[in-house]
Image (cartoon, rainbow, N blue to C red; front, side, top):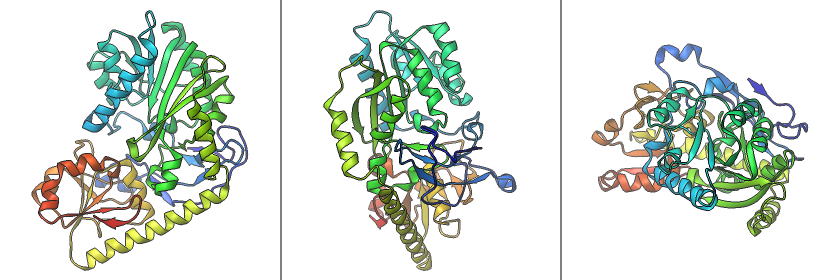
Length: 409
């Protein structure tokens, strides 16, 4: 268990501004016989008023969250496949095409969904993926992958074997890493003089604006803003050179980072800093307001589901996401209100949701016996899901969403 009484970035004293209560491992889908041994921790977010990092006070050990049974595979979503195809191609075209024998490294490379493009383009590459089961899938595709946690020590070994990286990139990974200074120190050491780190993660601004508190779970030890990324960079002779908003995961930001003084800084950087300061990202009152909005959302969702249950209507969850773990446990929603959660991931099926212990069943259970209401846990894939589920709506099925507000669609 990593417990930070001091900020992980700058060592400033931090205090939680709220608690989500006891939370299990967000991706810890389990069999009934494992209920008695289930792991819980108190999930308390904090805001550092010195480096502006939004972070969890406590985070479970990495081995509990990322292991040989990790049930998330990026390639399962068609929209995410398209997103990562575009991401990979933009990296190659913008940063590598003009270089002789370039080297690319991806942190948290998952099943190789992005690195396959580098392999196909015959670009020297390395994937670093701590979860052995998904790393193995990448290896079977011929993608050069090692299954370890990246830090300053590993960076030394990679540098000795592969040399400097012209580009390093990560998608939905940096927010998972508590020892962020060790990671950035390793990156600073590994990058070539004009090399670039590109990473994207859920964006603090979108989370605050949409009250998408389900972005907060054990894996997400940070929710980054440009201000907090700049603070981290300053400690490692790096600087933020560009930003690009992304629609993925309900609102993400892509950050471009280079060695200090080695790249021209885009006007986008000064614009986002001004916007974050204007919206109060440096003020504790902003996060206290977010806390109040979370409590309101929780209360409204529980009241709506209770009302539907009292009307003898069926509700089924759609998508056994990591984020659903936060919603269910924080709102104290269990199998008395939701019959089951439908999911297409085989590793999650015929198990129970973490903490709330709602059965997780295959998609066929949803399609063959549609409920009156589907609670959309995978709301960030709404477009893709609604395109798929026209029959559900045509036959009178209704959707319940809770981001940006609790409502029936």
